[in-house]
Image (cartoon, rainbow, N blue to C red):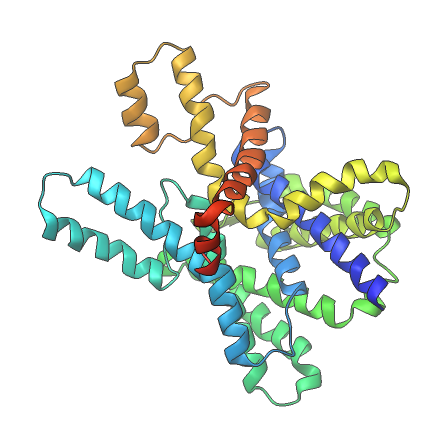
Length: 354
């Protein structure tokens, strides 16, 4: 049993690794980025649902999610918001700056907004937190516990349909849509023994083939709640997610040492996926600064456009997109390793900030 649990954890880390690569790939406009954009968030939500622990009481579950998701999300977004508002409203006095900060901070505290200039990708953490708590609350309150995964799959599928039909404030329609994928992940975990008989590379290749056929016929902008062919959008999310799970399960079971060359970096990226999710846009700006310097831009222009402005990515033609990809994956891992080291690392970890 312990060996089986270890194997499951192995493929899950690998799946998170390939998932975070897909996230950064989509943000750096590497070849095929629009196809990746279709499924990458749904895939991560399925994996998050798969890790759901039904045995935890609601208070214990809530405390875990506050520590692991909510506190890092809130702390870093408030920090960057304070910096941004203070800079943009410099000279206006303390009270006006405080009032402007509070307008933004209260939405961050409610997990309804984030600092879009530097930490745009962290909206996923806010959505994940709200979905986790809603799922656990219903799981705790509903009768017929043995049917919960099926009942809640139906409930959250209905919410997802509502999300497609109605555009809610603060871009919360995407939270409703993604909640169905979280519920699907929980359902897969519940029936994992039966599913593992079918989640083989053969099924993976079939799903990949279906994804290739379906993907050109849909696209989605989750922030604006705009989708071309929503039904096909859901199918592309499902087919590619199942394909990746099949392949990562297969890879996790390879015992030859040569496969470790592939598994080791994926495992590392998977275990540090939150670090990458939070810091990727910040690290992109380092490449952008270098590009502007190479083009002869003035330091003042670079400071206003990149450091203080909203330009986090510049030229992604040719090899540049892969430079952005490498920087977006590697530097957040190194930066957060630094944050976790030394006496400050002990404090940050005790406060659950990292």
